[in-house]
Every structure is written in C-alpha cells, then in structure tokens.
Amino acid sequence: MSVDTKKLVIIGSGPAGLTAAIYGCRADLDPVVYMGTKYGGQLMLTSDVENFPGFPDPVMGPDLIMKMKSQAERLGAKLIQEDVVKVNFGVYPFEIRTDNGVVRALSVIIATGANPRRLNLESEMRLMGKGVSNCAVCDGFFFKGKKVAVVGGGDTAMEEATFLTKFANSVQVIHRRDELRASAALKKEARSNPKISFVWDTVVTDVLGEKHVQGVRTKNLKTGQDGVLEVDGLFVAIGHDPNTEIFKGQVELDQKGYVAIRNETESSVPGVFVAGDVHDFRYRQAITAAADGCKALLDAEKFVKQRLDAQMVS
Image (cartoon, rainbow, N blue to C red; front, side):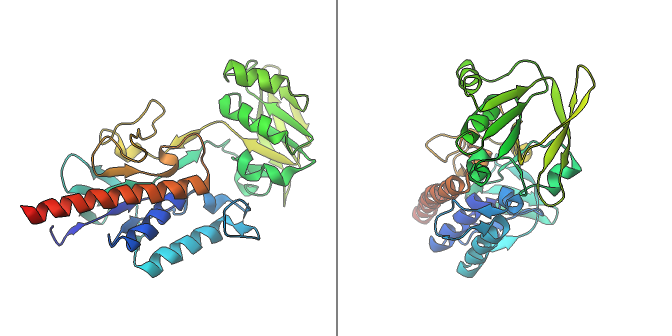
C-alpha cells in the first residue's frame, strides 16, 4: 500500500458518516472523513431531537452532530471540511478529488445523504425547526392537539398526513393539483381519515409567524385567490433529492437517483459501500443512518483486510 493511499475514505458527515468514522477508528482503519463545507446533514436544521437513544432530555440536532464529531476526533478520525468534487471508482485504489488535490483509498463509504425539496421561501427556512418540518415521524409528537398542514400530493405526503393524525387535531393537505399522485391505497386511507381535509389547486406563498409558525399564506392556482390557513405547523413533503451528482457514472443509481445497494451496504463497485439517506428513501431517520454507518464500516473493514492479506501473500 502506497503511503499516499488511505485505508478508508468516508464522504459525508451526518450520523451515517460519523458513526462509520467512530467504528473505523476502533477497527484501525485510520478513516479520513470529507465532511463537506456544509457538514452535519439534516440534523443541523433540526431543533429538539427526542428519539435518539441515550438522551433522556431533548438534544438539539446540531449539538448531537457536534457530540458525534468530537467522539470521532477523540478516537483519531481525520475530519476535513472540504467538498469532494469528483471520484474515480474505475481505478484501484480509488481516487477522491477535492479542490485541494487527490487522495487514494482502499475503500470508500458514501454517506452524502439527501436533501428535502423546499418551497424556496425565506420564511420557510427562518421557521425551520420552529413549526416547519420535513419529517412527521421526527416532529409529529410536538403537535399534540394542534392544527397542522402538509404540502404535497404523493406517497410521502399521504404517509406524513396520516401519521400526524395520531397527534394533531386536524391535518390540512395542500396540493397544487386537483388530484393526488399517491398510490390508491394511501389515497384511500388519507381520504377516509376524518382528521384530514384537502386544499386543492393551491400553493403556499408564505409561512406566517415570528418565533413559531402561526399560519400559512396560500394562493389558488386556478382562481388566483389568496388565502390564509391558521395552523401551528407546516410539514413540507414534496420529495427528497439524494446527493449523488458526483457519483453518476461511477456507481449504479436507481431511477430516483439514489445509490443502488446489494447485500445491505455494497454498491455496484466492490470496495465502495453506502450508508444513510443517500440510499435509504424509506426510513430517513438519524438512528437508521447511524446503524447503516456501522454496517458499512464492518463490511469495509472485511474488504480492506482481504486486500491487505492478499498483498502480503503476493
């Protein structure tokens, strides 16, 4: 192994990437983590986290990431706050390029996550974590007995709306069309729920409130009429975009752009493993991403050991 070749490079610094780094240190893989200039993933935009084990009191999302980061650093991980701009998985050792140069690696873990699609409103981002959310499973508990709205018309929106009825008194689904795009089963379930109502042909133009959500301003696309819905929370459920642009042509992606996996963590390229929301479009939880990071690392450890053992024999 060349002195310039790393045993393991991790691309991404959310729960998946940092958990892989923690386990990587314990496995003597000397992990190098490219965190990105905007590190930490979706937890950096999350306020109270109450469902991550080990925290009897709520923990702020950024604080949870910083604790993971500190733990990885203490164990010896090399954390680099740079963006990976290009990879070459067609050569071995693999090549990972940033604006500051190229490193080579015997194994790679892709943990770049996915970004929820936004309404692109200033007020949406200002009130993120203060009543605006992209995850009903994460935040629904905070809306017990309250009124909420869900934006979207696909499967995710119907799942979010139905889940929220466990807590909220009412759920209004705001959809820009006059027909849902969700599957027949999910549409039927949502429409039969007495807590769910629908606002058709409508978009959200502003989120109201200073310190927390107090309502949303809407516009009917057919009539042009403006309106206001008084709600305590807004859940934006219009899809996610996986951060896989630099991996196109390097590993197999599915139709939605997520990294395709086999055997839990393996990409289409032996030695390149995957963890977290960059492949998981179903669960999208911090704890499942962390579990993925652990599994990917254990598989990477086995792969690297086999490579090093083969080099010693040769």
